[in-house]
View 1 (cartoon, protein in one colour):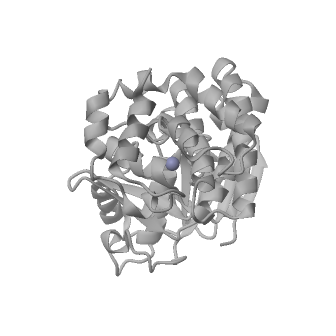
View 2 (cartoon, rainbow, N blue to C red; view 1 turned 180 degrees about the vertical axis):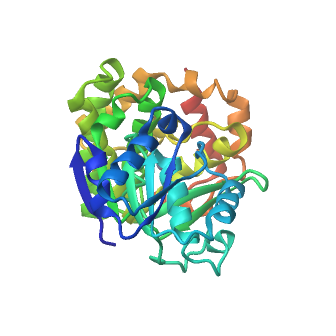
View 3 (cartoon, rainbow, N blue to C red; view 1 turned 135 degrees about the vertical axis):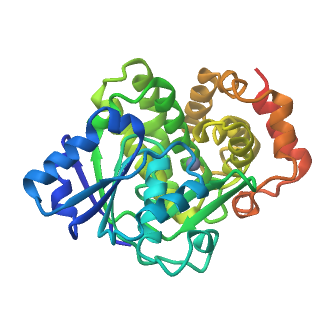
Length: 356
Ligand SMILES: [Zn+2]
């Protein structure tokens, strides 16, 4: 994996230098198309790379579905794209990863590639990721999460990494409050999940702790002062560090708990994977995790101040949450958790997490 990261306050000027050919697919969300970003990319390329043909993909929604990605593949597989640009959050980047793989490997279906552990660093089209949220860290991870709501399963494409990353913090200034909250909580969850993880190393522990310190300090500031550049920059960096940590360890129990909730109730990923963090942290104990009391306390204080249960209950009642998770844990993620898991322990974690 060889990734180049560029930090800028004008992502448009960086794109032309990163392209490898003239047929470019832009994957983004409807809000960035509405706000004129797709047009601006087209204009910039028209001036600096007039031979480039830019195709704007049908907008991607949250939690990308396999059926939509198959449909996009059918729509675009005859174009022989050279490059894929992802401008958006985790769902956009995950969709772009899937398309950068499927639009090059025309002899295999995307469904065959998903959940294939043997797939390591498969060939894919040159992929430029421009994250607009500070959370998933998808720009630095080799994973893409794809959903199949028909069969109620969560699938994963492994091994496709961005070739180029552009961090433009001005893109995050307009992120609405709940998206700022949920994406930072996803990053906090990634950092903690890499620590209570059987695959942790001194290096992942170190970068995860740096990430936690940044998120605990700067999330409250970004929530009250959305245009605070320092807060946005530090959250973006915190999310990147957490993404690097889970690139090595993968996620664990909090993510395993989240998937049935997203599948059944469309609960946003960052919320579904974070409302259990405080209870899990108390359960595994900070000295077991080699976390300082100061850092552990700042995590607990932040999580308690956010009243996440009020947000969870907008999607599901407490009983629905508990019932949805029974027997539904993804073993590949739950198995990374540092302690043994049983039904009683899981129920206690959920009950404690759901108490006001
Ligand atoms: Zn996550």
